[in-house]
Image 1: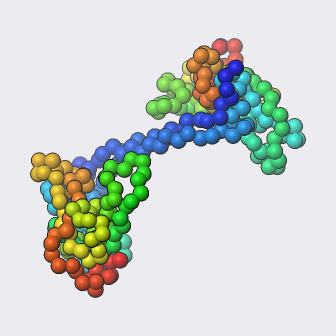
Image 2 (image 1 turned 135 degrees about the horizontal axis):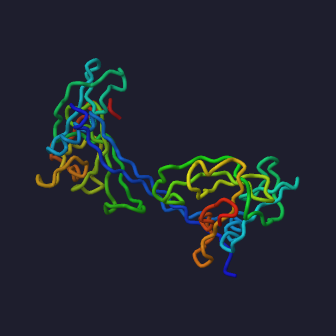
Image 3 (image 1 turned 90 degrees about the vertical axis):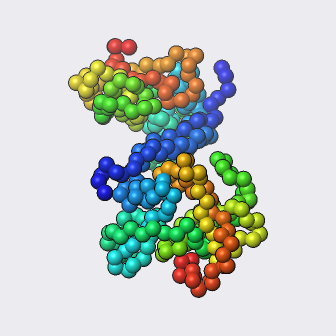
Amino acid sequence: MAESEVLRAPHVIEYTYTRSTGPVIGAFLTGLRDGKILGATTPQGRVVVPPTEYDPITSEEVGELVEVGPSGVVTTWSWAQTPQKDQPLERPFAWALVQLDGADTAMLHVVDAAGPEAMSSGMRVTARWRPAAERIGHIKDIECFVAEGSA
Amino acid sequence: MSEPVTMLATPIRIEYEFTAGLAQSRYLKGIAEGRFLGQRCPQCQKVYVPPRGSCPTDGVPTTDEVVLGNTGIVTTYCVVNVPFQGQSIEIPYICAQILLDGANIAFMGLIQEVPTAEIRMGMRVEAVWVDKKDLGPTMASVKYFRPSGEPDAAYETFSEYL
């Protein structure tokens, strides 16, 4: 039988999960809705962003939530030349780890840039927020990051 | 300010393009013609349905195609009484392992036209297909199986397949 006689068909799997956020991620998402990025302070004084309920290194409970950013440094990045459906931007963009000012960890988000030549590790970026009325308490309340000074 | 965020919708959707492969494509084309096609292992002579293109015991391609019967034996079964999201069949219904005549492996099928209290191991059943004009390369072409009216099969004839 020839290859062309092999049958193909679309096969879609879909789950409509709703998760409870817990107190820390809930506060982080509430902060995003209010236009603030929050991190968790660990007993050693490190600031983890996005915040976790426990210190990822010592497993101790985290303390107070503090505001960080909205600017920071791209630590690493990867260029997405062909965005897929439901990805944050419809045009080519960079996936990037952004270490926000005041944070000791980097957070995964996207950078809207003209092309890979406009990206570099160490570049300064700042958050571009969705309009307040459109923010719902979701990581996409930050539309993307952009090079600092271009926003 | 409004209420704090406590819940988060995280829908997951994965869109695959499923490729049936050579053996299953042959099988599905058989289904579109209203018949079950199996494949025989050249070494152990066992007939697999639906065929996967190779023998899981001997690891060799199953090249011989075999047309199987429209009838078979219920080897084991389960009466489904529990409703669940997305259920398309009215409960209670019977889900059974069916050993088609000529096959050496059972497959799963829906049993209808029999009270759930009367289903039993060894019951002879036959496939009920959709109207000829509605046949297609999909398992939806087989509506269900129902009792064929033949005498039950002796336990020894299918005990190997449980």
